[in-house]
Image (cartoon, rainbow, N blue to C red):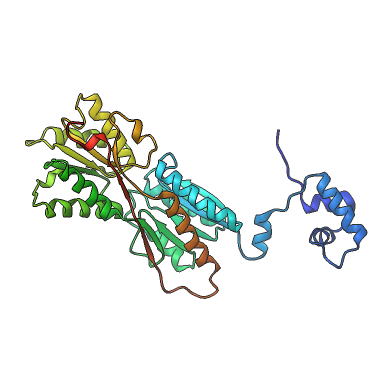
Amino acid sequence: MNFNAITIRDIAKALNLSVSTVSKALRDSHEISEKTKKLVLAYAKENNYRPNPIAQSLKQGSSKSIGIVVSTIENQFFSQVINGIESVAYNEGYNVIITQTHESYDLEVKNVGHLTHRSIDGLLISISTETKDIEHLLRLHKQGLPIVFFDRVSNEIETHKVIADNYMGGYNATKHLIASGFRKIAHITSPPNISITQERLAGYHQALADAGIKLPENYVKYCPHGGRDVSEIENALNELLNMDPRPDAIFTTSDRITTTSLSLLYKLGIKIPDDIALVGYSNTSMADVLNPPLTTVSQPGFEMGQKATEMLLNLIASKHPVTEFKTVVLPTTLTIRKSSIKGS
């Protein structure tokens, strides 16, 4: 059954009044008599009339909507970010429109186009793993659309950004493996063009350098689509397992790569951590009940969503051009479990 919301025009027709009169009565205008106001309000209540917030805001030059672009909402981290975004946006009277890129550049461009055609007031975006050209965002930024990046960011646009401390996340994960007695630590990560890959890789390299450990360059494996295809992770693992010397630990840097690596190693009969230790990035609440429990670097997704939304709404509300921008860096957390402890 279709539900058709009653409009001001419907009320006007039913009561034989002008649309203008009904509109003013609903706004409690002094121009309308009390008798007419009561008539209109009673009919509106009886027929479950609800004002259209989008129509109202468009009259004021604002849609009261913000667009969100993420890779996929099935990722626990992005789900937490969206919850943080909504907690701020709804409280300030804004609607949110969520789109997913599934790590596709073409879909990102298409989604951003759809969002702007819906007259959003601002955009929150974490770019896809395929995105190298951000002309679609540069053009909108030059036209005045407020944009705030979170998680995966671009330095080609001067605007606010909210990220996790990916460098320290990579550094602490690798340092922990070294402290646990592992020396041949491989790294499976997303494509090299995105910011989080570069930052986490830099932390990994620095921890190795601080410990005086030199490893072959091919100990680092990139998944071109961030592990969206399981075959990417399978290929990376097979190459590492066939190396001489074979790694004794692996540091993975996304939720999908981490959990898939754990599953594939288990199927291959690799004992974790006895044969190979594993530390990964993951915000899953299931890390404690995996076999073995998984040592993880987690990011403050909810707080990231909150902060990014606050910064975007400030840009939207500003009556003057904003020329000073901030990059907010939120701390990551390393939770140590059995997957990275020898003899556990």
